[in-house]
Image (cartoon, rainbow, N blue to C red; front, top):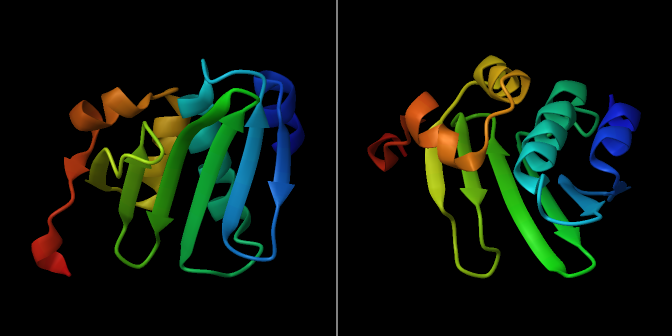
Length: 122
């Protein structure tokens, strides 16, 4: 699946010893799709057996998008402008996240397709 993502989005992936994955893309045009797809793939593989994962996409022109997932809280956080804070917080299960990727959902679509996260649950 990673090779497919690299082929489709024309980028490179850098895995670290943590739960943080970096994707280098040619440009930021498809960064939302690539970022969510890599987050889904990382969660599915769960190779680090962690409860929390983050994917950061960037191009040669700078940062693109960030997606962050907390498995225990089922909290998906997205950032459309790195450095400006989180753009949205959503209550999403792992299967729901996978369906968002299958549907090629962009970050703006999340407001229509997902429940907002209630921080009263914390």
